[in-house]
Image (tube, rainbow, N blue to C red; front, side):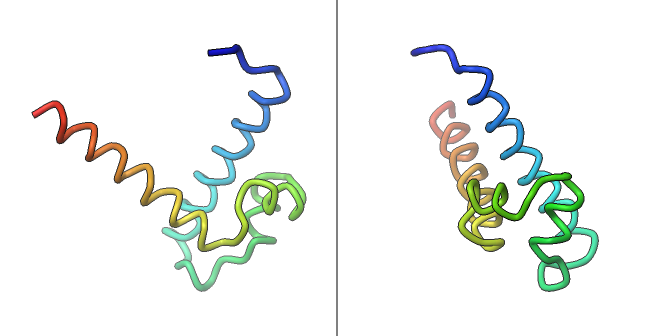
Length: 79
């Protein structure tokens, strides 16, 4: 596996920040009351950056479900 370039690392950090910030805002204000603009302002990035990582606000939720699914399938294999 090749090492990531600094640009790739930065992109992953940005993606994680967007994901975490989005989920925090959804939890605090409710999914319907949070806009992509609010998420990007909180992360200090452009809307274009958000859409580079997530096609829509809904995809943030899907990503979290994928993470949980992977976690539980890993746990299940151990036991």
